[in-house]
Structure formats: structure tokens, C-alpha cells
Length: 382
Image (cartoon, rainbow, N blue to C red; front, side, top):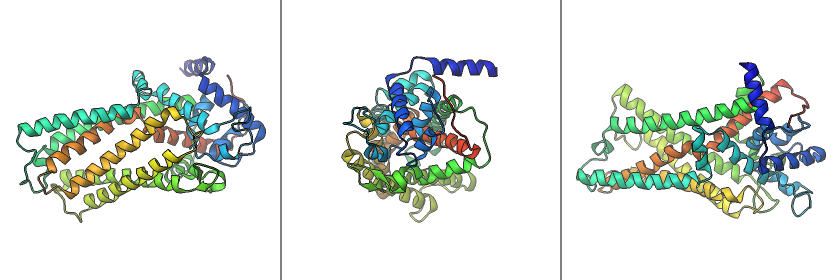
């Protein structure tokens, strides 16, 4: 079985490379000869451990890249130089290919080319319209006598089962995808301390520090830490909202404490703080995305990036509005809108921009393993 897996891996490495993979290999070879940016980030440190780059190396390093932009503005061979070295753009194009390559089920990888977030918003709209119709049929749409009880409209168990099944299914799809990715990029055994190192890299977003931890480059070569800060607001805002739902589930099933919960309760406080983070974080990322230098990243992926931000904002704004107006006649409408956006987000979670955090975490883990092993220069195979 091990020999068979090795043959499959070799077949992948020897398959005809895409234009994006070929470009990454070209620019990395130039960078490896120059090494001016050697200490900028984990991507360049990883590069120095290799003399050549196979497909697994390129997929790994593309997802290790955080697109901080420091190397683009520091590079003497960047456009308009004839060598045209643009690491952020080349890596971004390969990242999209990795999402498509390792997606599960495989056919769903096509959604990345069709802008999964746009499909998510359309799905959300369809769900909202369906829920509107359902509420109208039960005369609950403008009912103002429900005392903020969401479950008087949609039974708790029905909502938990429906959203739980979708969330577990989509999480499973994403897990299988990243496992496939891990198997393709890593043959090293896990070493002690690597998981902790990678976890800290994920939680601190150290690699959004750019050259010498001064921050990212946005519209020009000036450094700024705001991209890291807005990412933190978004990430921790999302995690706090998830924690709020988890705590509410424990309250309901283990203690028999049924919603609605007081504004000072733990689920509401966690959800409110998380919701605020999920507003300011995405708005900040949207601003930075719109002002960023045109050579950063892959312009073809901009709609997916902006759509993802819009999806997060739709969830957070509708959720906070639902909390504030839960005792009014508008609760039914807002509940439909919020649930629609959440369900749409869940359905497209493995096939849109959300996946970049999962694949990047796997790449950070592989990098931590290499560092802990004290890996030295190796030669890849084409």
C-alpha cells in the first residue's frame, strides 16, 4: 500500500503542470538565487530548504504565503523588470488551484471557478424567500407577541437538526479536502511541539507581519499592521459567535435553560462582541482590499474575496439587528433573513474563501514540522 501511495504521489508530481504552477516554480528559482527576502516570512524560509520545487512543494508554499506584499515591494526584479517576479500574485493563483484540486467531492471544486460566495448569496436569498412563505402560511411574519422567542416561530429541535446536519456535512467535506491536501504535501512524521507552534502561528497571524514584522504593504511600500488587526477582529469575532451558539446549546440541552436569554447572559454577550468584531473586521478588510496595489494577488479572485466579506457582514449585521429588535414585530422577518444568510454560508463554506484559513493552517503545520526537524536543503522532483 505504501508503494502504491508513493507511485500515486509521483504520478501527481510528473503530471503536466499548470501555467500557475510553472510560474511559481520560475519565480521561486529566481528568489532562491537572490535571497534578498530570505528572512521576510515562513514562505521564504521554507524556500531556502529547497533547491528545486515539485508540485507538492509549490502547493505547500502557495498556501504558506499570507500575501502580505512585502516581497513585491522589496524585489528588484518585480514588474516592470523583465524578470517580472511577483510572488503574491503567482502564489494566489496556485492557492485557488489547490482548493479546486483537493475539494471533496471532487466535482464541487468547480464552484471555485463559479464564485462560490455568489452562489452562497443566491442560496441565502432562496432560503429567505422560502422561510418568508412558511411564516406567512403560519401568520407569524408580523407577530409582535412572541416576547423575543425565536423558537415560537421555528421549533428549536427542527432548527438544530437542520443547521446541525448541514454544518457537520460541510465541515466533513472541508476536513476530507484538507486531509487530501496534507497527504499530498507532507511525508514527514509529526514531531513534538510542531502542533503548538503552528497553533500559535494561526492565532497570532505572525506571517502577516511582512518584512521584519513591520506589517503588510497595501497601496505602496509603506508598512501597516492593520491587515493583521482586521483579520484578528474577523477571526475572533467568528469564533466568539460560534462559542455563543455552543454555550446556548449547552444551556438548552444540559441545563434546560431555554431561550430567549437576557442581554447580560453569556451567550448574548459572546454573540454581541463577536458580531461587532465581524462588522469592523470585514469592513476594514474590504477597505484594504479596495485600496490595495493592483499587482497584489489575483484580480480574478477579487469577486470571491469581496463576496466572502459581504457574506460575513450580512450574517453579523442581520444577527445584531435580530438581537436588538427581537421584541418587535420585525423579529420574524429578521429571523428569516439571518437564518438564510447563515445557511447559505454553511452550504458554501468548503467551496469559497473560507477554505483558505483551513489550508493555510495545514501549511503552517507542515512548516512547523520542518522547522522542528531542522530540515536542510533538499531537491524536489518535477
